[in-house]
Image (cartoon, rainbow, N blue to C red):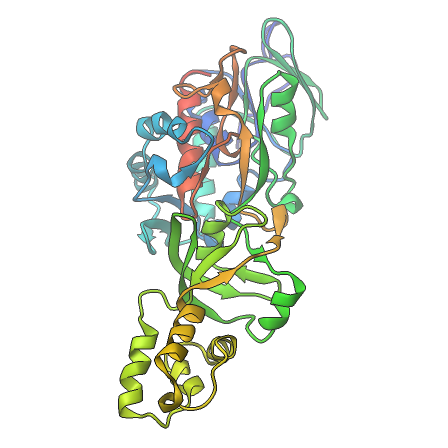
Length: 404
């Protein structure tokens, strides 16, 4: 059982040494570290259970970190801000923690690490660590107000007001509002005069305008390995056509770089020179239709769309070099302009957040407000898909937990 605070348990003065708002990955990790230092820690969350985003992550298996953590794989107005926390508490440190807890794991692809069992194993590990560290956990508790009380901070909750020397904001971003995500952390920052970088949905499916949906209406459910590019940034991963537009890992990754009004360049057969393959087939089987020939290398419905968009008909033998050049452009250089994204409803993360210029990267403490910390997704640091955002939660939570 987690420790339960009783009214009057502590002497007059501060109810706790540290109050942490948000029992997600960053908040729990910070609470554990602070509790291990002997701090009296209160962890508050509105949810019925802690770690709900951990529970649903990675298809229920929790992609808890990545072998290839590096600052360049994080987006921020100051990309180097994440360097200090990520170096002080690394992916290897968290992997060691998982190993010591006896949790089996595997690498799926591109350095992504998942539990062999369920994400619940990570949550159970964290809950046990919370209990061992003597952390008090209040669930189903709403935060109504946060203010400075001169000597520290007062948090007005749906239960009662509580006070502490230090306050850590780990409330996450706006993504997945059906799970209770709000902009609370941003409002707290602004109340203390801390700038918030404008937020938007990240790692999110992209949507098409009606005319593009009409062109791709036969393709929902079709998937390929694609290279999706925005400027100099490219991702070679799966792409999935949906009833609303595009999804899949490559699209989720590029969505964090894409801005409304921008076009994307998509190679629908990444790593394969399909026109050259068709040239070889034309020499050996020129009577094969161009559609059927392309369908040997792509899903048939996508082959039909590509041939149609290139304006081609007939057999392989009928195609000129110019025809195959048009096919190559339609296949390897598809220019597509999404109309928007699916928004916070399905976004895995929130881009933007508390301006890193206001924080000390060594501690995650607000420079102008001693004792006030911001960690995890609420900060303007957003990782790639594949365990990077969990590592940011562990790293930033650990750093703050050493001093809060």
